[in-house]
Amino acid sequence: MVNVIFNKVQKAFGSVVAIPDLNLEIGSGEFVSLLGPSGCGKTTTLRMLAGLEQPTGGEIRIGERAVNNVAPGERDIAMVFQSYALYPHMTVGQNIAYPLKKRGVPKSEHPARIKAVADLLQLGPLLERRPKQLSGGQQQRVALGRALVRDPKVFLLDEPLSNLDAKLRAHMRTELIELHRRLGKTMVYVTHDQLEAMTMSTRIAVMHQGHLQQFATPSEIYNRPANTFVASFIGTPSMTLVEAEIEMAEGAAFLLVGGQRFPLPPSLVMADSRHRRPITLGVRPEDISIASGEAARASVKLVEPTGHESIVTLDLGGAHFVMRAAGDVALRLGEAVPIALRIDRLHFFDRESGQRINTDAERPAEFRSIAR
Image (cartoon, rainbow, N blue to C red; front, top):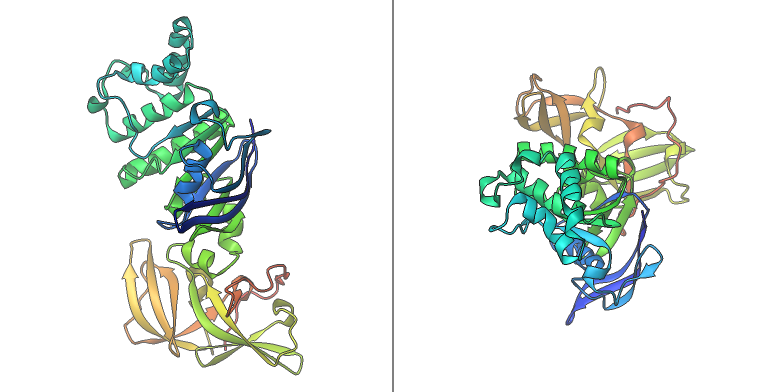
């Protein structure tokens, strides 16, 4: 197993800078997803690691070796493409064996290595079939088998599940998780699907416009997003982001949002001498709920039943919040309902920079929700 390092890596296509300055270290044996919207630079990053694109600047290392000037075939990596790229005139067994033939592995070793991969991926009964006789999921497993048979140091996967239907994608996610657990190899996975990244990854590198926004575990990215981009990109439905203020008055702290004033424990507020500080408030849908008793009231704007839950849009003085509710919740459009926020789960971001505020604050266990 080896680690992968991007050290001040840059990539420009003519006058267009795709990757301005990437610093990223992927640990040995990790499953790391490069996640972001289309055009964020994730595929370019993967292609530079594969040797299919040459960096404009900086250094890429696989283990102890700098690979900037190493040909793709000599990097000891294997890549699985979105299109599978199987040879239609070859059988499954021949497709899996092809990398062995290209690398000059003696033919006497082929059957044992093909069988080992076929057994791992449950492809044994399919070895004599051709790609057109296979389902999408089976073709994907063959593409994985062709990569596995080489026993590379690093696996690169470029949106390999995007051509599958939802049910098959879920099945293949499970298979990839199990495959990584068995092999323990370093895997770098490109996706725009946050569910794939959150469920499979050791760590996730969130990218936007060529810049690395955050590199952390799925839990940390969800619960402590580094900035408003990560906060809004991760989560379905996404985090509500609204303009708000934090007010300090006579040793007490308050959150001002939607024309309402919510008390805050001073320990949650970043030390600041200003009487009021403008912020961007982040609230996840599961951290706002219907309250009992006296509380701030919000108007129901939209109810979207999904079966096991309903997604409710609320209007609090012009600030719109999204709330998860029970699937059988009885709410009428225009109804004013009392709401509570989970104070230990609020997210504060700087209004100008979008960066997280107070990320190291301890959230007291005795504070669970706030009402007006």
